[in-house]
Length: 374
Image (cartoon, rainbow, N blue to C red):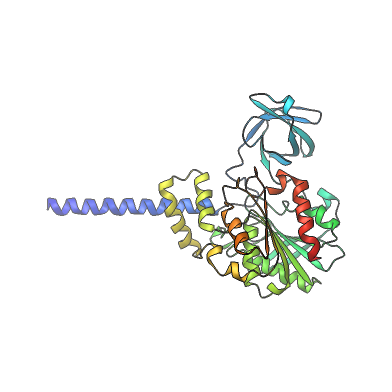
């Protein structure tokens, strides 16, 4: 009896530990895949505003506060844009950056803010003065809101944001694209504000969201687009690659522009979970839990038919500073398809923020890529 009791207790303990591990894995998977549009990414650490002056803002010194380039500064009820670090005004404890403008609210000492790649708030009209039309695109889960900015050409750009941002992110390049006379369709997809809720409430890192991009392709062709260039950031980049291979309208896709594309969903899921504090021992369980809940069972994109099926010129902006979607797969794709893929390496830029590190270089690279396609 004692042996039976001990055995039963041991089995119960094992089952209990197993159940706890499964629960922990499921929680970790949910933590990684529940990334509402606009929610800060784990790398976006909060900074304190110490002082403001004419054209300047003083922030807590940190690696993020020292990033080169142009950034949004986002906090409760405030949004501003900051430029380069003013070296001579900085100190061992603080960083002074050029304050370009305050777009929402007012920056005050003591405010808690984060650097964000989104340089604008509002829509193309309020942020940039561009005429636009609010449209709804019929998707498989329901209506998808989008901004349409008309222009003269019959080649459209469909812009698709990624992790931690909203459809305000493509506004960074909207003026540039409009100057090239390219119509732009800036898409909100499942999980975004105003768009349908995804199944289980979880994102699929582009593996199912691409069907919303496919709906946008159908909309563009129905409304006059002869060809389409898909511009995707992060998971939007993954959506672009899926659509380029799987869409019935893939022959209308004339080119791809990818910024920090997510090509290995397992690596990105683990990185998201780890950055949100999930212990390393639980990370494999998080991947398995995500597979079970969402059906995310596909191989990394480079292990599919993608490299050989890719049929259009592709520009990738990516760099070694990306810890959420490491740039190794981008380099490999460029090596495997040098006939189609151009890789623009951007050092010192985190995920989805290649434009911010050097806007002028980004736009010039983009101009050179787009010109032969128009």
